[in-house]
Image 1 (cartoon, rainbow, N blue to C red):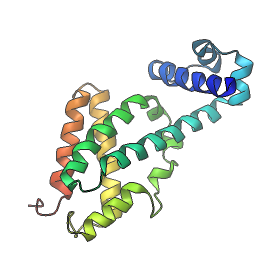
Image 2: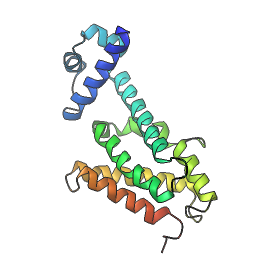
Image 3: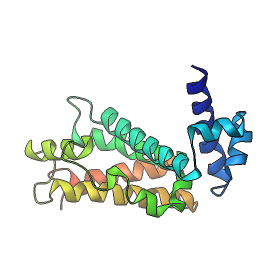
Length: 183
């Protein structure tokens, strides 16, 4: 139990510290977590290992956002209304990973399997006629990720507040992808 608590403390400290200093050292993260440096290295042998764990958390959180957004019986517009703000929240939490485009580019969500929840929902919603059929689901998936990154960039540079960016992202996705709204 203590091992899990220590690991969680290090992860929480890493997220908090890296958010303000993306180049923070493992020593700084250990100090911020209240865990001895040797314990940090027992869980995360290298800084790169810790970064990979954080990338894995992004994937888990993004999948959770999607799973929550695609509630049974929800319209496509309602899904996008939940998805937009959720994408922004995850982006804000892990913004420091933008400094690691090489690692993020290899994340599983960048090259989704057919059973990836968002891709699966897009495919099924298009088959049901809820989404445009002239755009392949893989294209819609890529555009959602691309627009999500662009919306998070708007927040990062201060042009939009996070809540506004989430709403605008949702509206953009709805108007671009929902059937009957393409013109």
